[in-house]
Length: 296
Image 1: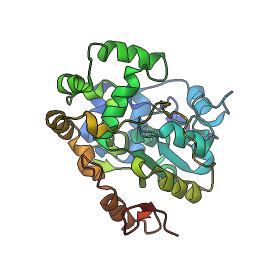
Image 2 (image 1 turned 90 degrees about the vertical axis):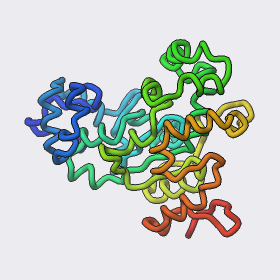
Image 3 (image 1 turned 45 degrees about the horizontal axis):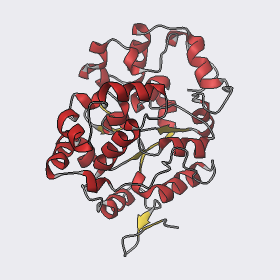
């Protein structure tokens, strides 16, 4: 993702994994191949004009709402934006514009040669799965952010009159992959075998301190501004779950819960930050009274 030139062998690169033939994307063998070999195979299966990729990577878009990977190139960082985890606020506050939208870490691996990809600082924000499901449902029930969200809501949510009914009838391992807002978080930042491919995990529940940490590390951005904040009083997701729906979400999002260390009531933050601090001693931790704090 150097933004200057692309090896002639790599003409036709497309940055979306979904454009590859499905059998190739689903192949375990494919993802076991070396990074740059996967890229070469990808180019062969998905030839498109190189100008499209080069423009997406290097040209400055006309406005801040147009997607661009240029800020990632300029700052040698990659922010993987998981839906419903404050990604719009983080992206605009750090980079001053819309960046890669909801592309997965595997998309960025295909964009970048191995050496370049490994040199970038890669991070993402994750959120309590029970809270995220409730937030996504509430958000889309109100029409979401654009026409695409509205149409998705009409197709999949219009028949449900309550959150309980929605979870009981709709949430399962197949359906959650029909919309980005319900897609498991690990699928955005892990490769096959559930290998975590980002360098640092930030927690939505500790967003202010974690954002400050990222901002200071990259030496970019401004104070965190919430771009997509609801105007109504925030509801406590725990009030909307029954024992049955709680267990449905636990079962369907088991990998997210285990990988990121969540529990239903949200009391896991202390252990999550303590575990992270083993690899990043300078990262935000919690005080003895269990309140998040930034270490100096």
